Image 1 (cartoon, rainbow, N blue to C red):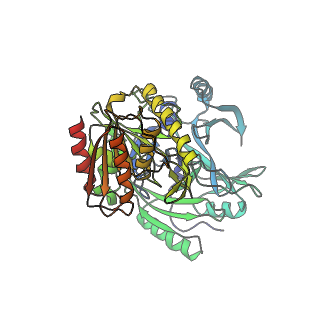
Image 2: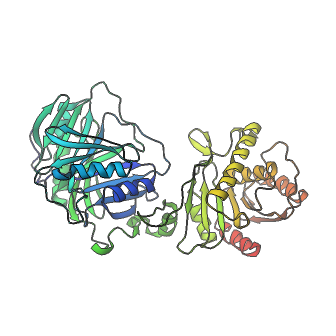
Length: 515
């Protein structure tokens, strides 16, 4: 199969992978490898997903490795139809120093070893992704310092249609190089693509710890459009073309299933930041600019190496903090509704109390793949034993969070929506000394028998929607709070079961009065 007539630049533009934890990812790629974050943005496919782009000082094509952050997301499986390894070129005479650095940083490392006559260190990043450092003779050292990779050296693709995959890669300016067992090396002027014949191996499954795609360089927008026309003539897979602001790109799958992107060198990452401050601003895609503030609250925060950071505690529930620039003393603990996540209510919490630290928590029960706080048998029948068990685990979580994050129990407000509000009420019944201030939006009773404990001094706001089909279940809960001695405010607003614009001022006014 011949090369396409479209003019390509030389080699790989970037590689995009998926990480489960943003902070260890930053610590590895900035703190250990010495790359620079050249852009942080909400994803162009999903603005509520953080996208970090690492590279050299200016984000030059050929130096870039990028990560979609699926914070606490499900792990994938590396297999056919995926990039399985990423390699960086480093000066040959610096391999020993890189080995020492890896050992000092407790990075998993194998080698040095020889691959295709080159000296290689095989590392694993925090997600278990294989990152190779390849010694290159005569390579110039980067200006940032001796222990900074020079550029991307290449990728390894797993394929159960290896001949067709190599022929497809040849379209992008690569020529066949040496063969080593099941590996066929494809060579460009600047880098390589190794295609491994993995016939009989498992197919890849997208998720954290896997690659999303590899992008090859193309000259300009006209070249992308020409490539699109040529690929359509050759009956390639579905083709998508996008303006990614920093480059114009095309996506297509090669015959073995790996997602391939063609990306232009320009406009580049300096279009909205100067070199001195490159990568410091969190951007939102242009189509989502009206939601910019909410999106910035939704995206996971991280600290650069050497900066102060929130400690990480191993607690019974997945959780995430949002800390505003000027945090006050209050912390709001957020419990999502059915099908939500630990981040779902953060925009609501931030609008209610802009200076509050937010602690979002994810329920552990699942129903058809969505998160809940306890199992149910129907919309009105709930697993009582599971509620008791999860309430006990949540009590342990709260106590662990107070101790581990040095939270002030007197400054905690627990805010829940629907299933989360129901769970807060159950926790207050089963552990009456745990929660001293609660906001229950569309809350109801779920325990068949609500123990009547002592809730004197406990402040509770219930917000019920007049058109909520479950509104009648709120009254027994309100009556229970009063019998237990809680200071209850029960507001009814023009709303159904979902959130309403009235919720924010209603909760804000109550919190202002409760402080």
